[in-house]
Length: 284
Image (cartoon, rainbow, N blue to C red):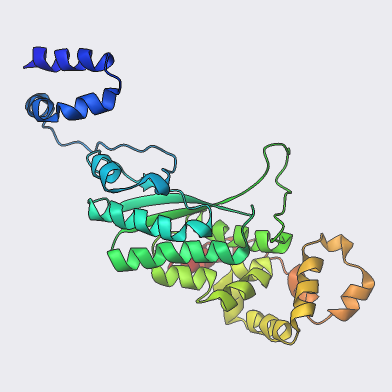
């Protein structure tokens, strides 16, 4: 049997397509592999560590991929325009028994902040509907031609990027499948999401702490008094370093700017408090 196996493998080297040749001899190879493979229980799996192209996933490709011990299957979802393609790919993977998936989600490129929320939300709802596990890793775009990460996409603001960073600081960079946690961290809808993007950094990270002592509600009251044009101007101001706040801006937004200077202290016993707050936030 081993001679037959070796003979087929050698012939495959000269075939036009190595993989197609082996697949065409599957009825011969499978019994040999099954006989000689180790039967000991092992946690063996394959991770490509890169996203497969959802546009190339169909019944033929997915049926073959599902034969591998893939964990997780990574499917790229970098553009909201590929929503239907991505969802179809996830459903096909589920159809063939793949229940653990992951993806990197690019943001700060040509996308809008709303696009990031929608792509993450789609994964959360697929998790809930199909009872699978999709872990998302939002990845901030930065041109390889630049030596730092100061690049800001044309639809983004520095403040928005800092807000996303603050949320991911708590989640350790991962957006898992928990429905309640996602809507707590990113907002129950786009309106709340945009409000969280506008929220001072420490009010995001230490959410429970500042909600319980009333500071978050005080900030929200001041923020909601602003019209859309003023909110836009405020985001431009708080995107600058504190030292760049000009006096006329301070006067115009004197009721709300102090909240953006809040820094949660970590002195003494407050280090333990910080850990408790992070744990409470992660529980959602």
